[in-house]
Image (cartoon, rainbow, N blue to C red):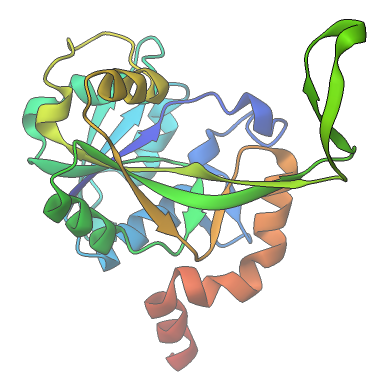
Length: 248
């Protein structure tokens, strides 16, 4: 099994932590970087190969990870000279990838079983499967349903500070290679464009709802949360490693 990890972003929302280090190498709990945690999780899930899509400060990531042998993985690289979007970097290495593979952001902390997720996608026959998470937003205001416009409108329903539930992308995608054959290597391709193109063509992506732990480390407050939760989450995210250390 193979995974493409997107690690080329500038991490501007996470400044000042990313001023001197790329976001995937930001440490969690003064123990491991985010990228190290992901690499060890992938190996535990049965993955043997990883492609790192690097750009901003990519030389630091390349120097840190190397060939991946210390993680039990074979790691290769693809360089973005200019930003290509979420899916764009994958187009440049598509011929080197297996029929089904993983694409994921390099700043995600989750106990999702990546191997099980990819195998479910392979069996589904979907063009792409998105790992999704349930979120909700509570309105700070009473919400009015209004019929008509201006002075002639009427209130037909009222909800006091309603809660809206929805599913969001976790930044983890299981992909079938042929899905991306319609695009040209080197072009900019975002996840949003891919989804809209598939829906317009009647090719419906799959949603794999996950109910475990997930944290997207995009903002300083998310990073602070990750560090605060690390003592309790380390045995969940890296069970073999933590148990092994305890035994030692």
